[in-house]
Amino acid sequence: MEMDMRVYKNTADISLRTLIRECRNNKITSYDLFQMFRNTNRENISTIFKYKTFNDDFTDTLSCYSDGTNIVEFIRPSYNEFLTKLLDSLNIKYDSNIIDDEELTQKMLDRIEVLKRVSTIYELESNFPKLYKDLVNGRKYLRYINEMKKQNRITESEYNKRKDYFYSCGLKRSLGEFIKTQSEMYKRYVTRRYSFKERLRDKSYNKFIKKYFDTNKLAMLVVHEYLSKCEKSNDEELIKEYIRLVEMYLESDYDKNDYIVLDNGKKIDLNNIYQRLENIKNRLNNKTCVVDWVLIPETKTNERVKKVGTPRETLMNYERIEKLRKIGESKTSFYELSGYLLKVVGLQKNKGYVAYIYPNGKVILDREYDSNAPSTAIDNRFFVIDAKDFFKFSGKDKKELLKNEKVKHYNHSKKWRSRARKIIEQETSEEAREEAQKLKIKIKSM
Image (cartoon, rainbow, N blue to C red; front, side, top):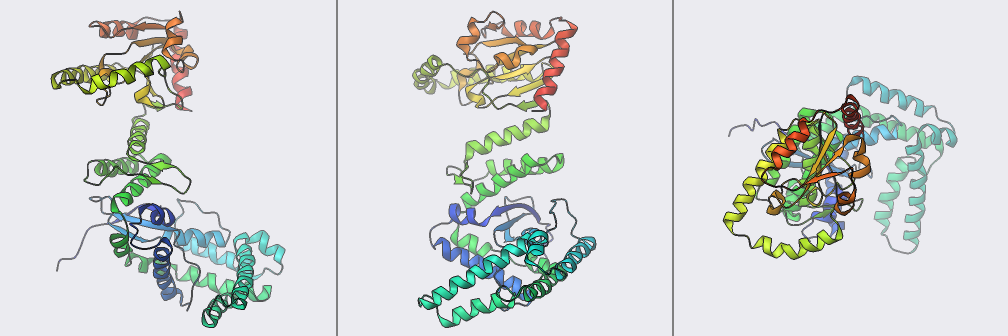
């Protein structure tokens, strides 16, 4: 049997709660499924840290691994989550760039020495707020299970099992006993964490994933995390790798017609993925920026015309669509090769315009060709404004712009390119050229 020599990378981290809520295939309840993940991870933890029972689960976040040829290969417990919570408990500021080395080990052990010297509740709350919260919540929980026992809602053996854990951690005893037991427990966490990391490398939740989850929705959730990493990162090579994975997903056979809802209520669907990917590519390009308003939004009149015209557009014959495609692609090519300083994309790009800022201080706003709406190749005026007026006019609708003397507008006639080229090459004042540079800098800093 040949050894698997592929290298798997931790490509994304996903919320366990979102995974269960959004991707579960209903063969099992959410509660039972969560218990499966929790109990499996407790086994991992107790094996390394030698606790008979263990209530610190570290299962809020799961890690996805890929070898670069699949969207996701393994779903595993997250060591990064464990380390983050460990540092939080010891009140050490977490940094995503932190190096998990001997220097960090010493830093954590030094904090444990500080913990050992705590003698008052006030000191505990001030220096170790997370442990203080654990103490308070632990004592509340003990009162809760005592009440459950009185009401016969919990068996004697289960009651003793839960109580023994909390007593063993010092959560019900004196502050001195709490400090002693917590210091011992966290020292064990620190010194044995690499063994825990090794164990997690050999364990995965794949059997749960294959049996109880919709892998199409899981893939969408993971791709969302890829995009989130791109949006937060300035590492060009990393961004390019995630773009590659997202594009691999878009070209794959996964069913992409559904959607997921994140813990914060945000909806993720195919349109959201396409838009974010385009924004990321634009940012990487560095000659394209995205602003948070619609450039030249449609007027109500135009929206009605569009609705009336839609059926006719869908009935275009193949030759007409192909002709418009060639015109539209030619229009796109013209602008992309026109030597603009900066391309500005607004919200709802396919319902509004894009702007091209030129070195001479002129700004051309035109509809970008959309293959899903062939008429965007020709059926729109393009507008010309001065760079100094960009913020004043770019958010106005067509009706307002057509009435304004400072705004020039032209139809897409046969000679539209030569007219646009004259505007782009027009000699202007030094002041106008300076305004173009100022506008570029201002938009890029937004």
